[in-house]
Structure formats: structure tokens, C-alpha cells
Image 1 (cartoon, rainbow, N blue to C red):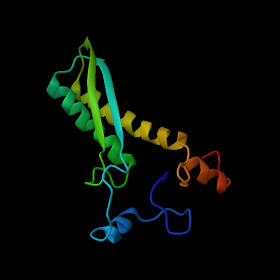
Image 2 (image 1 turned 180 degrees about the vertical axis):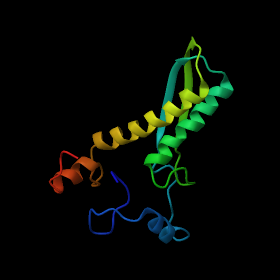
Image 3 (image 1 turned 60 degrees about the vertical axis):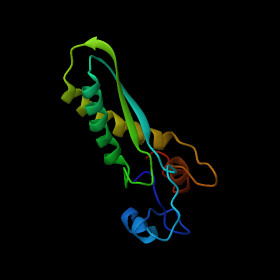
Length: 133
């Protein structure tokens, strides 16, 4: 786990599903306060329908790295676009899109700086003496 809800008063990671279950119905959850947004671009030729499928498949990269993903409380969205005319296979592009989206989320978490009093992953590693993780 690189980032997420922490237990009260510590930097230990909380059980995400238990946390979500405990706040549903009693907390004013802010829409889009935890959002992943991205673009997958290819130099392959895609129809509108194929680009939509690539974006759908790329969402798997979000689901692989974010817990929970795609809830009503966030705006997790991936867009896909085609910039070229090369023949391509939509299944291959979509499968790679999911992989690179997952890698991009991990890189973004590792590169992020803390804000508003909330530590980032690298801040927590420094506190725990584990800067090389």
C-alpha cells in the first residue's frame, strides 16, 4: 500500500473497506475529493468506439492501484485518444493501457508532495527510515 486512509492518530494504513463501511450514511462525503484522471494516447488508428473501449480497459489500471476505485464519491476517469493512422489491435492497446495507467498511478504517488498537513508517501517513508522503498 502506497497511499490511502490511515488509522486515527498514526501513519498506519487503515482497512479501506472497513473505513468506507463506517462512514457511509453518517458522513458528508465530498464528491471528487479523491480522483484519478488520465489520458491514454496512441499513434494507432482507433474509431470512436475503439477509443471508448481502450479507455474502458485502461480503467483496470485504476482498479489495480486504487482502493476503492470508481465509487460515487470520486471522479475516476480515463480518456483515450488516437493521434495517428497506424494499424493497431484495440485489445492490445487496451491491455497495455491498463498496465501503463497502473504504473502511472504508482509513479504519481511516489512523486507527490504532502499538502494541507497530510503527508505524502515519500514523507511517510522518511519518517519510517525507508526512503528507498
